[in-house]
Each structure stands twice: as structure tokens, then as C-alpha cells.
Length: 148
Image (cartoon, rainbow, N blue to C red; front, side, top):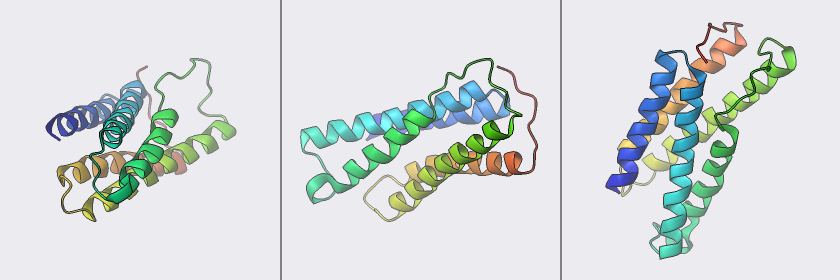
């Protein structure tokens, strides 16, 4: 469990770095790699028969949820996207809310499993907080200048 937790910390730090530098590519890359890492390690555990609960229910749920995050957070966005267009803003709200719900739910799931490393809940909490802040920014029309 040491390697996944170390990677989770690195990918969370990458997303935080993207927020600090106002570089959405790093934010998306952090979420993308974080989700991909969870999918990979849960799939490997499931295939090896090392599951937390009988039947691998938690692993299967984690794979499904974080595969969605990995797809949504794919870091490459075309340069010609107009982020001030109302349809793009609406889609941005939906995507941001989805990423918030995924990570907020993961915090709850981790806290409900005392045998799971609780530091992972902190990483998910930070990722949920980033999306929560972004939700407020989009909803209030605050789009800060970004460095691509």
C-alpha cells in the first residue's frame, strides 16, 4: 500500500501545484493520473484475489468511479475552446461537480473502512476541495487568467 499512497500524494500535489500556478493542465493531469492509479491498483488487486471485502465489491466500485474521473479529467483540451461561451460554462459546471462528487464520495468510503489507510481520505478531500472552489468560481463568473 506504500507505493499507491506515495503516488496519490504526488498526484494530489501536482493538482495543487496547478491551482497555485493557475495552470489547468497540471490540475487535470493530477486528477487524470490519480484516477488512473486507483483504477490500476484496484484492478491488479482484484485480479490477484487480494480484495478488502468478499467479492471485491469495493474494488469494482472504485474502478468504475475512478475510470469516470480518468476519462473526464483527460488533460489535453483543444486551444480553440472558448471558455466564456455559455454552453462551455455549463459543461464546465457539470464536469467540476462530477469530479467533486467522485472525490467527496471517496472520502466517505475511506472513512467508512477503518482498515484502509486514512491518509487517502485526506488526498481525496484535497481534490474535492479544489473542485468545490472551482464550482464557486464558475458559478460566480470568476474565471482567473490562466497559464496554458
